[in-house]
Length: 356
Image (cartoon, rainbow, N blue to C red; front, side, top):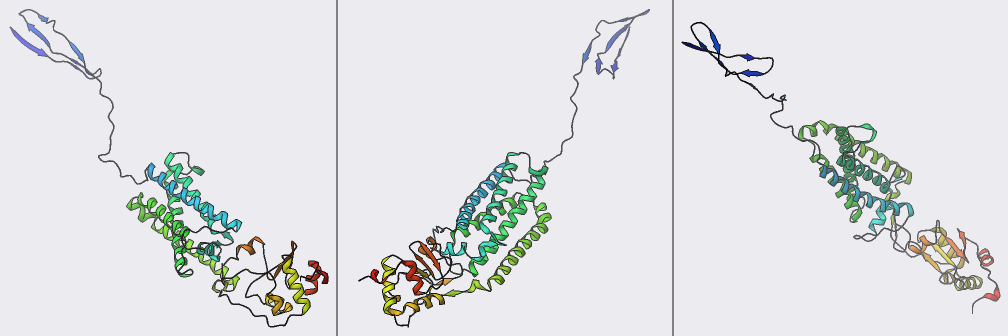
């Protein structure tokens, strides 16, 4: 008796049939009843995957939140300074005394007629809003994609850092010896935003954007130089004016009428506001004469001298003095030199009202 085995494979149905054993007898073939089949499991489709993941070139969510937080601090600082600038209020300077006010009221605090703190407020708010949208993955403005938004963010922080470096140079040259805590804080915030934004851009991408950054930096410096050059020409180099305080001397003699009028004006609280360098103020005092001028209630608006950007004392600011000399008599404001007879008439002076 001979025995042989047949294996059958069906390629279309993914079924593998087990061997079928046949026993050969002299006159017939009888199949063995050991026929079986098994179903092979179907394998899921395979996908190709890269051998290594690509390096991340974009900032992580927490980095964008950090940028947004730093820009928020800058927004609060510049909003405070913009309010002071627009309302002409005094600046609280933790270090440096009145130097913060002098810098805020100088020609360098205005760019083409726009207060510099107002420009900073807009820049910080834009960076904060854009980085916050990148962190929360919300729809970006104007339908731009994420890479374009990162490029805009880098350009914004580059311009802010460049402007801060320029103002730091101005602070150390035009305001030598002065200290401005708000200026230094703004420099710290701007440079922090720039380096944090730059850090999360790949090395290859940094070289790609180097030309754009240089272009933006050059444009910012050119804009500021143009603005300040035009301001200096308009002011006729007024930024260099500096006058130390000096006392003026009245040489004319006082008449009995002038002396009596001066005492009366003092008794009713009439005030004369002036500046030590004002020639018209000196001429007004000469009308009274030396002895009578000493009886006047005179307010010097620049007792510590004058330099471009120096503000008047609070008494002159509160009185809203706009020129010198200025008289305020019984609530009435008189600008310029006023004849003694007119002062007597406006103040209600008469011989009978002469103080004893």
